[in-house]
Amino acid sequence: MKTIIVTGGAGYIGSHTLIELLNNTDYNIVSIDNFSNSSVASYDRVKKLVSRPFQTFNIDLCNENDLRLQLSGLTNIEGVIHFAAFKSVPDSVADPVLYYFNNINSLNNLLKFSKEKQIRNFIFSSSCSVYGNADELPVTEDTPLKKAESPYGHTKQIGEEIIRFFCASNPWLNAVILRYFNPVGAHMSGLTGELPVTKPNNLAPIITQTALGKNTLTVFGSDYNTRDGYCVRDYIHVTDIADAHIKALHYLTEHRNKKSVSLYNLGTGNGVSVLEVIQSFEKVSGKKLNYGVGPRREGDVVAVYANNSLAKEELGWSPQYSLDDMMLSAWKWQLTIEKGG
Ligand code: UD1
Image (tube, rainbow, N blue to C red; front, side, top):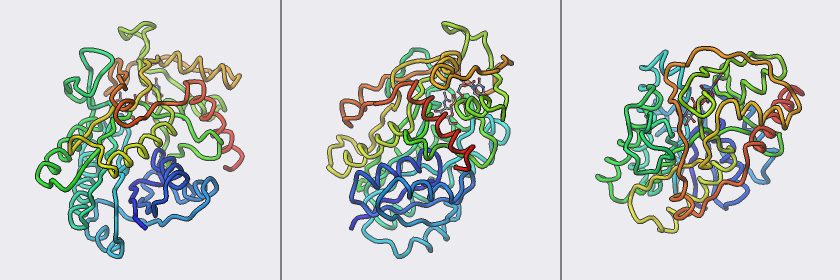
C-alpha cells in the first residue's frame, strides 16, 4: 500500500485533512507532529470520525536525524503534505527568529528527506499573507507579491521560493503550493476543531470563547479604508481546505500537473469584514457578543480576498460551506469543548 505523510497532523488543518484522507482515499496515512501547539487528544478525536487506523510519530522536523531515524522503515511513500509550522501573525512579530528557525528548517529537512526517499509529490501549506498589502483585489496567483507584513508571511514567501528552487534542481519532484486565505470553522459534526495549546489569537476561537465569557474580543481597528472600516479577509471552512489537499494529491498522482510547481489560492472569493463575521456568529448562535474596538494590530494587512478560479478549473475544487456554516461549526465545537470534548 502506498503511504502519504502528513506533517502537523494533530494540528488544526492537519487533523481535518487526516479525516478526509482516511475517509476518502485508500492510502496508508502517517502523521508526524511534535505537539508544539496541539495534543494527542486531537488524534483521538480524528479516530472517532474515521473507520480505519493511521500511524503517528512524535518528531520535531527541525531535528533532521530524528526524522530520518524514526521514519527509516517507511517505504513506498507516494507523497508528503506539509502543514507543520508556526502560524501566528502577532507571535511572529514578537519573536521573528523563532518563526524563521522553525518554519524554514522544518521545510528544508523535509525536502532533504523527500530527496533521500525519492518522494515525488509534495504539497505545501502557504498563506495569503504572501501577498502583503496587494494593490488590486481579488488577488490571483499572478498578483505580484508585496513586502510581507509579518515574519510569518515572510516565512511562507521564503518557503515557496525554496520549493521552487528545489523542484528546479530535482526534476523528479512535483509540488503544489496552496495559499490558504483565512481557515475557520470546525468539522460539521462539532466533534473536532481548532484547539491550540497556547491562547488563541485568531478571530474565530476568540469569538466563540468570548460568547461564553472565557475571553474578551477586541476588534483590531475600525478606521481602515474598507467599506465599514474593519479589516477584510476571505474566510474559508477548514473542511473545504482539507478537501483541496485530497484534490491536489490526486492532481499530482494522476500526472495532471502542467508544471513541476503549481500554485493555487484557496479562498471563497468573498471579502468579509470582522464586523460581518461577528454578525454571522451572533445570527447562528443566538448569542450577543460583548466586544470592544481597539487599535490596529501590527502585521495585519488591510484587506485580502481570493480569485479562486484556478483551483476550480485545474483541481476541480470548489468551496462548499458558507460563512454561517463556518461560524455554526466553530460554535458547536466550542460547546463540545465545554462538555469536556
Ligand atoms: C493570517 C493569514 C492567514 C493565516 C493565519 C494563520 C493574512 C491576511 N492572513 O490570518 O492566511 O491562515 O494568519 O494564523 O495574513 N482580529 C481581531 N481581533 C482579534 C483577532 C483577530 O479584530 O482578537 C481580526 C484581525 O485584525 C483580522 C481578522 O480578525 O482582521 C482575522 O485575524 P486572524 O484570525 O488572526 O487571522 P489573520 O491574521 O488575518
